[in-house]
Image (cartoon, rainbow over all chains, first blue to last red):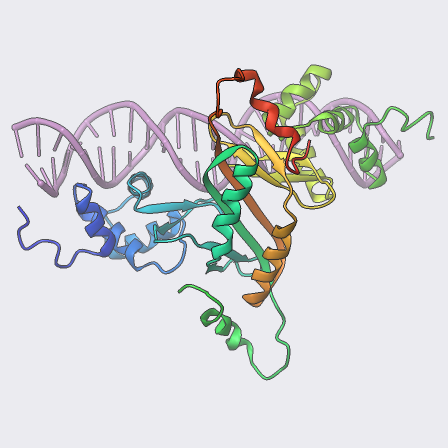
Length: 164
Length: 164
DNA sequence: CTAGCTGCAAACCTTTTGCCCGTCA
DNA sequence: TGACGGGCAAAAGGTTTGCAGCTAG
């Protein structure tokens, strides 16, 4: 039953198999696109990337797949405003998002204090916390000196508990 | 020109006038509905309430008005999931929302620590915070004892820094 | 009098679905 | 082969818009 399988299956493809999903060509491609995505693509973007690898894929399938994987807990849907849902693979531990209001780029960050604080607040109001959402909308701080050119914008990414 | 003016103008109606908006009958009604809303109605709900006061109002006008008032800073648009935008009057000071996942009811709360924490985080990542969004999705905690019937659900609303 | 509003209906956009054919297991 | 997945196009659901007539200022 396992044939020589799995060998070239993407990370998310493997997760699909684990949960007993039937692996069709389209699904495999979408799983791979998702596995390789380091950002938070919306359906249209996923469709574009998938279509590059295999043109026999329709948007409807991307929508259905993404929905299915969300139900299976493999993906998480995000809403950063702007009308379309965006997706990212489920990861261990909470993390949050800061959206650059000028470029739309998303920066992930962790904050240990937070989850605890959220629970405390819900508790205080007489509720059990089910989930929470936290997003920061911000603008890159102008460089303090002129020692660095525009390309240096990414520098911050490797500091301060940033992920990825 | 001012006639006996302003006298019976709703709070939001007055704000519209301050910003030089032309006060039509429809706009006055919508402003009043918004002024009296203690919750976070979506456009359809606003339309329903407005139509009760004056049936010569169309949804399109509600959409246009709500959008205009948002641009003028009089209203704030919220997205609590579920597809439709919801609105509330802009208020002094930050407050956040806890959405009861079972009933959809929204509870507002303040948390001083929070805004500060958000700024600190953005700062740490090299950004200037423009705005932020925080929502808790939670479920009412089961009553500890059976001393209270269902109607007691609202009890918590008067404690713990809750607003309204 | 005219810039700005409104109603109506059509247009838009993202996401979902019905139907029927194709395919994985 | 039989249950499940996919393509296509139509449908849904929320929101915006073009147009022609109306109105506050």
